Image 1 (cartoon, one colour):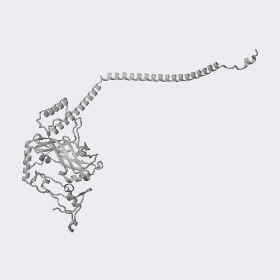
Image 2 (spheres, helix red, strand yellow; image 1 turned 180 degrees about the horizontal axis):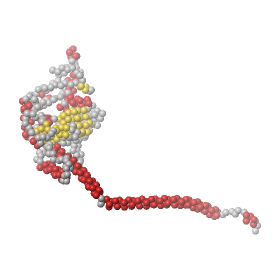
Image 3 (tube, one colour; image 1 turned 60 degrees about the horizontal axis):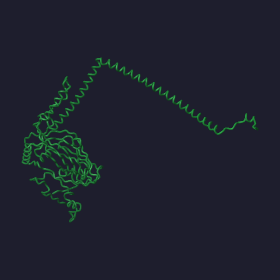
Amino acid sequence: DGVPVLGGLFGKPKRTGEEKLQYHNMQRELEELKIAEEIAGLEIERASQELEIANIGIDIAMLDLQSKQEQRFFARNKTLNAQFWGALSRDVRAKAHQYLDYGIHLAWLTEQAYEFEYQTNIDIIKLDYLSAENWLAADQLLLDLDTIEFKRLTLAKQKDIPITHILSVRDRNLVALEELKRTGKLTFNTTQQEFDLAYPGTYNRRIKNVEVAVVALVGTEGIRGTLTKAAHSLVKVNTSEIPADTQGVYSDWIQYTPSPYRLRLSRSPEETMILSANGATQSRLTYTDNEQGQKRIFEDHSVTGMWTLELPKYANKFDYETIYDVILKIDLVANYDAGLKDVIEQEMRTLIERGEFPMGEMMGFSLAHHYPDQFYQFHNPVYDNDAAKRYRLIAVPIEPQDLPPNQTNRSLTEFWLGFYDQSGPIPVKAKVT
């Protein structure tokens, strides 16, 4: 029909749209098959690694099984070995001795607590329970502990009498108070005679709680510092309840009246109270007990001993010159003996007859605080004549009402005059009449 045959045989035929679509689909499927081939290769490699890991796990399990079997075999054979039983018995004995050592140590502390509480020596607990072949060492230790408990339950003990003692540093030692203003450190002592005269008839006095009040002009941050009580102190005890050869027992200030009461050395750990503001009154520094029944700071210490109050200047922003007083409130408990009260009163009468003034004390007066008008005149004198220009004259009246009303027949035994500025004591030539 007019179509050239040669062109139909050798010419390039034209593709239809459907053929093109099939071609592209085949190309895409070919690429996906190549990717699938790569993924399959990776899966084969991962499976080979898992197989290798599984084989290693089998080897480990076989080694562990072999080890367990060897241990079982060794344990079965070891129980039949005399050396094993000897080592086992030595180990059991060592543990028994260790537990017994723990028991001896705790029993010794129990005995020390009993002697501290009742101020007597019992010397029941020994430290050589294992020094000999004592197969009943633990039973003997238990018996000794029961003996201490029996003594505690059957001992007739007086009820503790609560006492509150107020101590003013200003009344005791005005010079020490001035040192506190200058250095921030104050050291003072409480003595047996002080408490004997304040509460005659009491003995075995123990601290229950301590509060400190620093009377000064302070800000909202309050006062920061520490109060420390030394480790060693003395306790008044009845020596009729203590063996005669007991060490650490000394005579007290009672010299002329026979008395069974002496002073016994008490060794308590040195303790320090951290002082900080408490409540609305910022200068009142207290310590409160915790909820677990733990003893307070200084609790069960003797009321006597050396105290150190430190108020570091780097920790406090207030002016130390505004410190007026340091007040110590000591809550304590004590036992009472009317016979001891009679002894103290008789000793006081004897000392009065001998002229030794048992009620003597130091009274301190500060010109700036007690006599502000005279203090102003001292710094701003009125020169009436030439002699007044060369000297500073000041008259300080000390009236009977300035002294304790329960004292009579007062006499001056010692006089001390000091001049202080902010740096401390200063040398001044003065004449007192």
